[in-house]
Image (cartoon, rainbow, N blue to C red):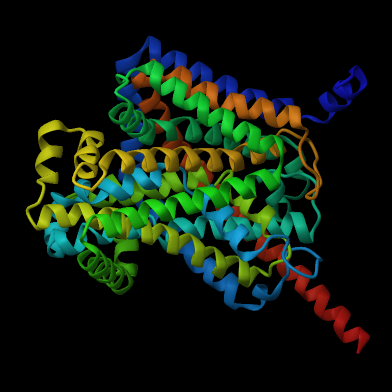
Length: 515
C-alpha cells in the first residue's frame, strides 16, 4: 500500500467507533487487575440488580422478538426480496453452513456435552418433573427459537437496510434511521455505535473463557503436553492464523471454512451417536425434550419466579437472553449480508431450519449421551462434577467412555478450532465494516483493516489469559451491556417495520398506477 492509498483509507475510517470501545475495554481490564475483588463485587451487584429487578424486561424482549420474526415471515413483509438479483447469492448449503457456524462459536460443543449437569440439581427441575425429562429440555430452550430469533429479526432488518435501501453505513445506528432521522448522524447515533462495538469486543473476548480450557485439555490428553497458559496461547494463535488467512481471501474463504467445519461437526456427532452405543435412548430423549419445550414454550418464556423460590430464570434464562443480545451485535449483520437474493420469509424460515436443526442435533446427541451414562449407571457424571467442580474434567471423563477416545478427542479439538475460526471470520468481517464511515453493501473492507481486526480480536483474550478474574469480569460487563442493547434492538425492529411498510406501500402504489 502506497502513501496515497494509506491517506485515502485513513479518511474513510471511523476512528472514534473503532478505537474508543477498545480503549474502554483495556481500561476496564486494568481496573480489574488492580482492584480484583472490588471490581468483582461491584459488577456482580450490578448484574444481580439488572437480572433481579428488570428480569421481565429481558423475558418480554425475547418473546417479543420471536413473535416479530414469525410476523415478518408470514405477513406481507415476507415477500420482500433482499436485493434485486434473480437467485440467492449463495446456495442453500453454503448459506446454511455459514449462518450456523457464524452464529455459534465452539461454545456449542462445550455446552452440548455438559449443560444438563448444571440443571440436574436445580429445585425448579424437580418441580417440573424428572431431571431425565427436563434437564434435557432446558438446553434446547436456552439455545433454541428465541436465541435464533434475535439473529433472524436483526438479520432481516440489516439485510433490508443494505440490499433494498442500499444504505452505505453498516452500523447499528443506521438501522435506526427511520425513527431517529438526522439524529443518527449526531451524538445519538455515535452512542449507539460505541455501545455496540464495546459489547462486541467484550463478548468476543470472553467467549474464549468458556471453551478454550476444554480445547487445551483435549490437546493435552492426546499429546501429553502439560496444560499451561502457553499451550492455550499457542492454540489461540493457531486459530488466529486460520481465520486470518480465511478472512484475507474474503467470503469465498469463509464459505469453504464453514463447509469444512460443518462436515467435522457432523463427523463428531456420528462418532458419539454410533460409538457411544446409546442411539435409541439419545434420540428418544431428544424427541421428548422437543415435545416438552413446544408444549411449555410460552410458560418457559414468561416465568419470572416472582417469589424467588429458586431464582432459576434469573440465574439461567435471563442470563442467556442477555448473552445472546450481546452476540447480536455482529452475527446478524453477517447473516443479513449473505442473505442477498432471498426473501424475508426465506431468510427467517431458512435461518430457523438450519440454525435449530444444527443446534438441536448437537444438544440431543452430545448431551443425551452423557445423560444416558448417568441414568443407566455407566458413569456418575453428576458425582464427578460435584467432586471436582470442573466441567472440563467431567467432559474428559465422558469422552473416555467412548471407543478410540484419543481419536475422539482429536476430532473434538479440530472441530472446536474450526468453529472458533469460522465464528471469528464473521466477527472480523463485521467489525471491519463497522470501522468505515461509509461502505456499500457489495464492497469488501480493505484487507489491512480486516487484518487489524483479526489480530485485535485475538490479542485481547490472550492478554486476559493471565488474569482469570479479568476474563470473568469482562464477561459480566458484556452481560450488563445487554441492557441498553435491548432498547437498541427494539428501535431497530420498529425502524424496520416503519421503513418496510413505506417500501411496500410505494411498491403497491406504483403497481396500481401501471395497471
